[in-house]
Length: 477
Image (cartoon, rainbow, N blue to C red; front, top):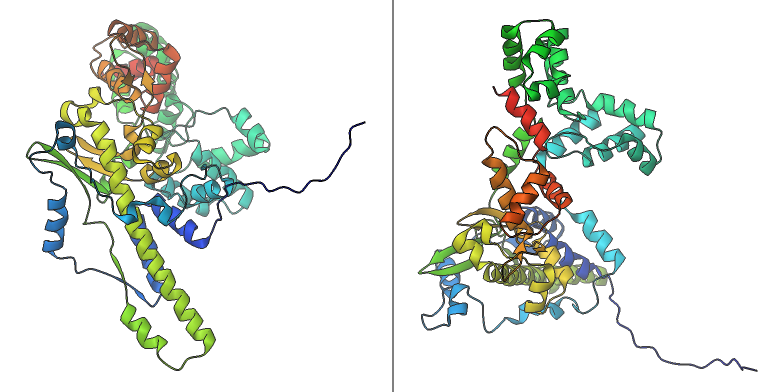
């Protein structure tokens, strides 16, 4: 018979303690420069030893700039992108936490999700309207969830039945909330189809009658070009059809399109800048938006030398130590952003030289492996940062994409495939290209890709289906 016995043993395992300092360091990695400045302003209010350092001299900036330029005798690979051979001790992630912990701590991941900023002004605009229109808390929560499911164009294309099941709320209740949301500005937002959006916009402008309603409800006939059938359905003549088309053309096919433009214009300045100097690509932090902080050690020493209670001295010491830690964490953040950005640009040099079609497939692991950092660190660093390149301003996340098989020697990135899809659609003539036709065109160019993947990429770029594009083209006759 097997005997059971209790044996004492020692098990060695790695874990990570979620200290306030670690939480702060993680949060700083997540913020972009604009959000960082707001965070620092709050810290300055709470900490008497912190202050803004607004006295950066041109000499300091020139020094930082010159340090990024490579000597002429560097190798060809090194000459394209500058990377420091001697990293500062502050570059070592172990200064803040051990990056070998595995990155799967749910408490940390949840905390990060909760600290991601809400950047889209269109959503903020809708949320303000929700807070005014709905007094009931449950109605507000349903409205917020529906906002989260909006497409970039402003349409709501989800199944309300599935949505109701997912959130455990009766579908009639959801429909009641949605009916109120469809009254929001801009008119047409939360529509579930292009037709409904047009109807809402014309109703708001008091231009809706039975004839134009019948025309909008039969856009597929308009797309087919059967003008005689439309004349009969709308009970009008050819002149009446074209007058109604003119009215419909005045509607916005994408209710939130103006906000998309405003959101782009509202981007203050990027966090990182890339430029070419003497045939070399230089990567720098944007000094214009990077907040600088100093810790007033003299003020602390002056207060600490006074005859204070132990409780007061402990408070001052805690605040002073907190300020020093923040300073170190900010240096860590800057150094890591710079390292990650330089490596991204080094690996995407072809994009800078030749354009979007030449962007390479790259995943977080590629950067993490090269810099000996954890993938979660790369993800947080790139989450909300933007980089200004000669080819435009892009999110750092933009440069990460999956590999798509091709007939050539190298795989190509999904971003490159998206660019090709957009180019095909932009160059459409009278006949619109279906997703199947787009797949065939890509196959002809050596890119093996499934039709459903093309549909997914097209929707991610907010490009309507071929049928919807055909309808919109007919409206522009």
